[in-house]
Amino acid sequence: SYTVTENGCFAKTFGLTEKTEPVIYKGTIDPSAWVENVYMNEDGTYDFSKEALTPQEVKRYREIFILTGSDPAHVDAYINGEVKFEEVVDEYGIPKDGWDFVVWTQNGRSIIPLKAIENVADLNNLPPLKYVGILNRDEGKDAATPGIVLFPNPEIASGYFMLGETSKTSAAGKERGKTRSPFTQPFFPLNHKLQAERFRELMAKNPGLITWMMNTGYVGGDQLDEKKGIALKVKISHSTAMLEALFRNEIKWMEDPDFGYWIVDVNAPENQKLLEKVPAEILYPRILYEKQGRLNEYNEWVIRIKKEREQFLLKYGVDEKIIKAVLNVK
Image (cartoon, rainbow, N blue to C red; front, side):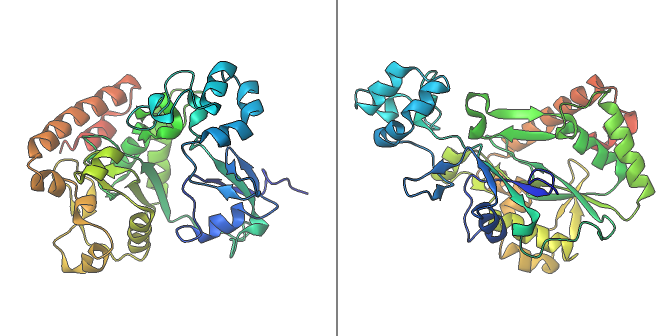
């Protein structure tokens, strides 16, 4: 027989709701599922969106916090009201050193047995692979990655998968920020350039394979900028709409003039249905920067990001054709 880890589905749980992700939600609350780092209410139910903890909530977990390294004096000072929440976190809600216990981690996850997932695929009878995608959670003033892009050739796909770009969320706490990790796989035991070469080789052998990248973070800023109205959050509903349009082959694409990958043509009538669900600024971030008079920021980002990407790929000795494709050198 199989254990849940051998025959299960892994899922991140922060922000999980039945409305946005019903299959994952129902599977996660199934008694057979395993959960980790998920806040549990006094009645035994889960709070998947828990962030700030009240003194009373910290008191409930006092013993655990202390056993896992929190300073007992800090814990008791917070419980007794001697220290206020806003005094020990920054504007993003990230705790100061020694006060991590006042915020519940966003790094919650679940492992759901396949039997608890509705309409699960038969793993013994899978259709040929048609799509391979990578997620890039962009965030910050220069968050200008489109909501979805299509890679037109094996070289550019291999390059972006090799870059493995993303921004660490607040689940990473003080380590949040932009990172690059080849194929998002830091534990590869050989030269990382081999991953890019092998991926390109596999794509060449499977010419019908469609490769794509999604931005699941922000456009134009971060969570504080969104509250100010100068940035947009790529919501789950946006991601769902973009993926559905991609899988149904309903998107009219155009080449991004700066990067060479394909983006949604926001002026094409064929994309009107998608634009009703996803803002044009998410599909083509340049529009947001232009509307806000920040086009210089965008143009500076284009130059800087290309230079950073080139240096990263050169560091690993990646093939010149792949590098040129990423830099959009014809």
